[in-house]
Length: 128
Image (tube, rainbow, N blue to C red; front, top):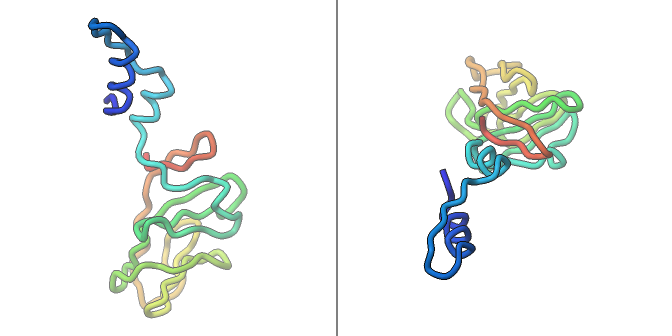
């Protein structure tokens, strides 16, 4: 799918009255096919994580290993607030989840956080 900006640029580049459609480069096509950028790998500390847009929590349990989970606590739907000590922490009732697997470490939550598929490339983390 070609973005509006890319299409306008291509049409303008075609010049004087003739319309030429140019296919997007492989990099543009790959970028457009992938999900939105959630974060930069530089913004996710090893052993920690980051809450993104109040919807996702991205962690880096070990150097180069990135995980993404829903930021909604499975107890009552509060948004998790932090990642520390290998745990994703919910401020509402004290639930803690594994930063590696999303499983419950400490209740009252009984279900793990939903894991999200991501793609990590060129320093960017995107939904897969």
